[in-house]
Length: 235
Image (tube, rainbow, N blue to C red):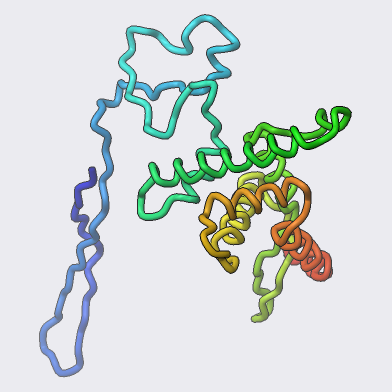
């Protein structure tokens, strides 16, 4: 909940040439004040499952009141923060339930394809076939994460595309964004829904194939072509 608060800013004084009096105008500044429903002595909950696995004791005193956890936070063994972030990117107009169902159907499609491949393969090669869609999803993201990117820096009135190393969060965001864009913007075959197209893109990235891998290599190639401007990062 947010309430506006009016703060008086310094006044502006105008002295027009044809006026005999000074006109003073005050422009109030509206600032948002955000507050929680909980008092200040309420502590935030600890939802990281690793904290409870290391010690049998609770990470806080049981006599201290605790705030309710957020809807997207969980200490369950099935909770995956990377999958939760991908669900948020997949979501449109706040329909998270629909995004979760689409991602669940995507994982089911990956599982079905891999299990069929497992049963059709020879007995000695079955051990190399991964059937866990969660593992496939994480390896696909690792395969398409870019290591270096480009940023626009202006020097002497001219803009340069300067290669810079990317943070882990930025790498993960670009990998997820490329996957979704390829699944959504590709020409859609007849009667092929988003979970089927997204599962194909994830499997292609898992096998280091497809257009998403080409985007990663293209970005690295552009960064290598502009390495002469790398010194603009510092001066």
